Image 1 (spheres, rainbow over the protein chains, first blue to last red):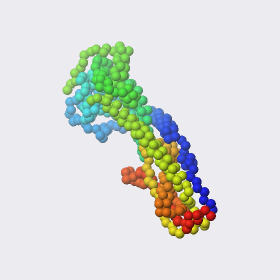
Image 2: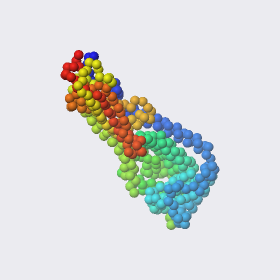
Image 3: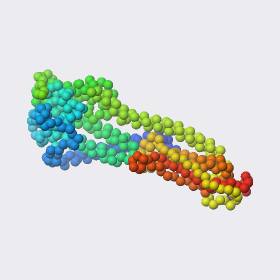
Image 4: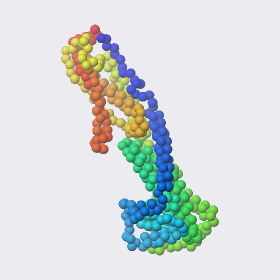
Length: 269
Length: 168
């Protein structure tokens, strides 16, 4: 048998596709798929909301508290006063189906949350930052707006969607990418919900005090801090840009003819 | 608290860093791969005259004076770019195109190392050549992750009675 020297042939075992083309195809294609699935799941969450009436929700989450919550003592004056303020605001929401409970979370990050069953959480950090009752009332009114629109359940649904995606892509490095994509899509919806809750909150504040003075002061403060923020970040955030929120609140007050001047109510602690 | 700065930082960490790592891995990985393929092609043409066959018995017209086992082994791992793209590919399935050149390099390099071993010890040809792979488990993730792959080429190297024995 004759031995014929020959070198290995190329182009059979290795694909000709340029790695960047492969990367681009996969990233664009999968992003599209992920966004479609996320939209579909959001749609399903909306449908599910019809089947969980408020009464059922209240019954399910009665006396429920998140496990990682660090509450202050039940005798805390701020807790007492915040609860009173919520009750007074809720009075103006005539057919409120919830009995709102307030808890203070021992966290330095200024935040407030609406949780299932009518639970409102405000953080120590937020209470440290507010300087008047009007400021606090708007934040609480905003959370009440979430309850009215049932955004708190949508947020729960979003959490489930994200954990589903996390579970599906858990075993590889892509989890971060697909999660970011899904998260970004969901955050777009979240920003719209925040704006709607803002509107409801401002209406409550006006009904209660007869003016909207200092309602948006917290955001004005944050907007000054945000001067270093890149524009692109506001598209990736769950909440609208603080400056934009101040603007739309001002527009709303102007449109409705609500006075922007008025007596400020001091905090009662 | 400067929340704007924190959010900017978060955005950079969430999106900028992975993209930067991906591009870095792509450029470095591509450069190294090109260099490796160049070296492989050079050595393949250098060794082209050296008979390497897969027959499991020695061809009848070879007359050997001595024989030995020769091996060539390569351990390869992925770069971050290949890993991420392959991870995306694994979701929908199909040819993992970023792994193919990697394993092609490993196969050919293992063969070349086997031939180099045979030539260094003065052998004239190798028959019964086989290729084996095994996965190296990564200690993290309970050994379920892959640290790399070993490609092993082995065969029986023989010395001919005369330099021209095989050209009958």
